[in-house]
Image (cartoon, rainbow, N blue to C red):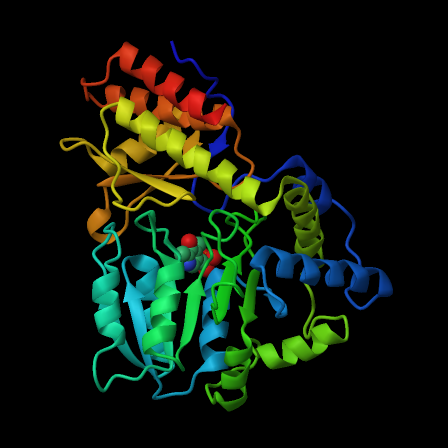
Length: 388
Ligand SMILES: *Cc1c(COP(=O)(O)O)cnc(C)c1O
């Protein structure tokens, strides 16, 4: 007899994420035109709220695209064909940085970090200080969502500054902002990219990008082709209180609702809350006898190893069908090997507990006999204590 009500649908993916009631209400408001004094106020409020989220004095620009568009915008606005860039590749999203960089004709060098491993700062430092290698940019994820691994960004940024003084340190913070301390100015990050469907807890469809002064200087020289993603034009329009192209009115109004909520909670508390969900999930999974995939687990997403002998793809689908709960599997060589639990968005403690219970019951349904009733009870108690 399940302890949770699995009639209720639960979206537990690392993006998109469940929406709060306040956001749903904001999304329901009637459409208005983006070139109106009424909207100008809303838009300005969003821009200033984003600066607070990014902890920067620089303008943050809003693009009507998913996070990947923000990554592309970051690259084409700061770099020129032939520029040498160092790309940290530790999973699917690092590969994405590299793919975009290759398409625009940058000369890419890869710093490979094993999937799920703790990023080796000494090896990273060696890559940055290799004689004869001068980079225009260093690209990395803060959290590599595909492996649920957090990278030591503060230290990486400092090493980049020490050994590659002129390189732009560009971070894909899409699954990290709001989940872990990430003060853009204080840590001297040159480009930071975020997206709406992760910790911002909005529907998919917006990306946010900010450039440091150093990056704006690079922008003046950068010759990569760009049209929609021209951040300088966007910035100039923003300074006049408007967006350069049509604005995503409905999403940006909802963004303000989120920023209100976040300001009331506080950035630190928001991150702590998400971190607690991750810890509860990890400890709960351990109590079920399961291992965590990443050596350096992220607060925003947890990858639980599927026990050997169990078909992970089948397990994921079974949880979706029988327990009405969406988790994500692994990609490429992690296909069928991990299950990823998202911790961002409007998730309640009960949702976390239900996801652990669903995992345990589904494993048993598939014939995995190692999990007994007392294991489930202990796992849920442990997780509940952490979430309290
Ligand atoms: C979700 C995500 C992206 C962006 O993916 P989109 O589907 O384009 O929104 C990029 N990087 C990371 C680390 C992500 O988690």
